[in-house]
Length: 235
Image (cartoon, rainbow, N blue to C red; front, side, top):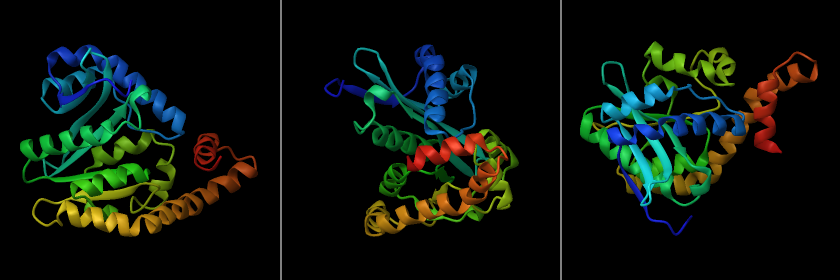
């Protein structure tokens, strides 16, 4: 699989045939990680393709490899590159980075004045974002659009988010502001210099935020989905 030529480009109408494969993989991947994402239907993916707001990765032979799409919030003031997914057969091949670069470029082209942001629990995604010029920020610097935060309801960590009054959660917030930003070389260097500290921060958040739910689980108070998530991190 690694030797196959992979093409990463803006998705076109003919690519809508992959919509069910994409949404099925999004769901199964989230279950395997024990985390939740805003669930999307094949129809929603097809709409994004029709709007020219999606990037797809395919082998030269036409096998689906990966996908990502653009969402806008607060009257196009904020843009999120959402739903990044890569086929299990092509993970750790570098294609995720190519998809992120392509969707970032498309976002800048379509919405040159918009702030581009993301939420992630993964150090690998943080690294890719840093190489694009994203900076770690507080949640207060993200869109406050209620529709965006409503999308977190399907995540197993939603209870944590709300208990922190939407000011913190398991995810790290990252932002690219076209009007006020460091160069990618600078944000990449910052990440490389502080990678160990960022990794410790992620683990601390996992320990701190999940602690009450682990206690609840120990006392027989439910929280099974959080238990799955916790086990996926440390076992």
